[in-house]
Length: 258
Image (cartoon, rainbow, N blue to C red; front, side, top):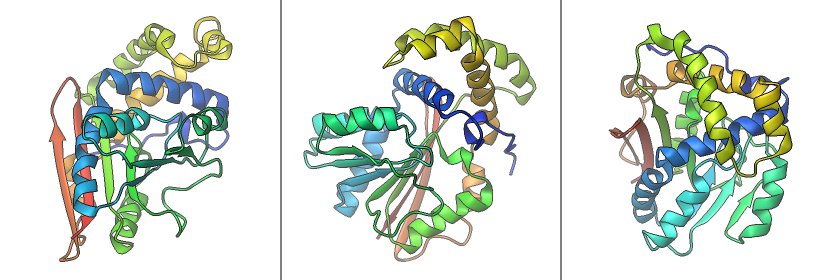
């Protein structure tokens, strides 16, 4: 594989969760810019029709990512009224969970940690991972795929890839930090803590910029997915991968029982 698995702040156990939450809220802003929810809805619409499964289990949800808007697209554009969403994370955002759990009976944020590589047996539905699969090293990434196929659970994975030469990585870190300053006013909810540690004490821009750039080296491209899928797929389960072109390249992988 050509991917480079350098560390990201978000993955570190000791990393303060309040900073992680601020960063995941910034990521939500970026997903809106890249129209991730619309593309996810199209992929999920196909899986729902293929599998007759309307419950979606989102892994590594952070602050909700694009999945809240994805559900709106499924209901309003694709006319799937009975779709349900369960948001989960290894480090649950309890503040957003409390807010989300009050809003809609069809959307729930699980407050207990859920490890995407070791999913509880009672957690069943279409698994989704949006902008999070790259957090897994190859052995863990393959384990997720193997378990989805073994349990006959549908899965939909999407990664957003900004294409640029690796030699430019280090130049993009300061540019990503500056970008953080511009998109922070779009964050919802925008807290005093997010403002202070962005503009007065710039801890969030530094961490966000590092993770944003390192992510590009960690993403599983289509050739990498071929390696992960080696030995998988049979008469009972089908894998499909592809690329959605646009302002940013979206790489996707879906798996579903036949």
